[in-house]
Image (cartoon, rainbow, N blue to C red; front, side, top):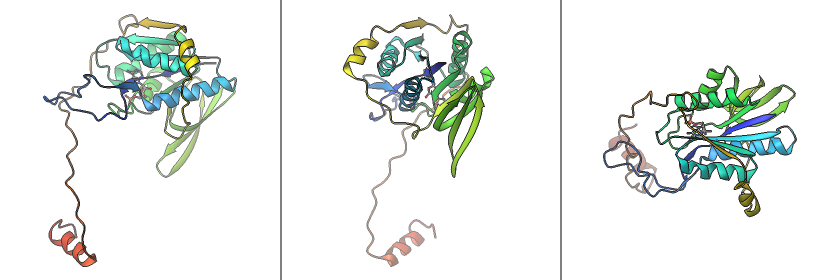
Length: 249
Ligand code: AMP
């Protein structure tokens, strides 16, 4: 079966994010970019399905500028078979991303679509759900286990207070949570081999999707800085401070 995986290029999770002085967004100048960690988990899951003989082909798709080819190449080095870059310099929001993926789904007809549960740049946690709705597919979000059985997939979901397992008819959409798997590293020979794997370039216009934003970002601000803590001598002093300074008891 064909598996489609969405991989997003985002700021590397180790980088301390800087907000632009005019508060219009995040400053991306000279910033290290990488594959969104939840997308790495999505690629790993697809590769494991291929190793088990369940998946026959893995297609990775990214939406972004030309340099997002780097993240597609990384996924190809990890075991994906071919890539599609939907090239745009616009900032594509979740609904428009979902419409683009829907267009690719219509064309490629995958049995399983795996996305990250969220992209760590905007933390939206929307694209997979929106894609499932647009494509009329079942969705298994926040997956910590994915088991394909015939024409069904059982997805164990991380929900508040425990785990919930849902059985979905294929084709279906799955979004990955942190405990689904531990992604592998790409070996040097595989990085070299990945350079020869097919990478198709397309655009939102080719796919007939308007990527104009449906939400306007009003303001982006850094989190408030926390003031330093203090040590108290004993419980009596703690209670006195909670009562008279913090006024919380
Ligand atoms: P979000 O809903 O923005 O938090 O993103 C959830 C998931 O959707 C990500 O982990 C990706 O798998 C996928 N996704 C969203 N935007 C893009 C994009 N521009 N390119 C590739 N994948 C994306």
